[in-house]
Length: 64
Image: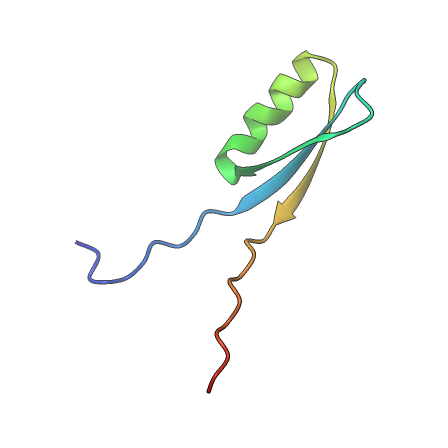
């Protein structure tokens, strides 16, 4: 039991694949997946850009 505490959110990264297609493919992955993404892209001769990604915060409700 966690005692009502929430687990910390995993760090996310935005991955942009650059290949022959002029439109880059962008995805968001967890930190534990970044190494595998880079290895897979490298094996296929693709370039990737990795940037930290922050989750958007939901808009706050207006106070009456």
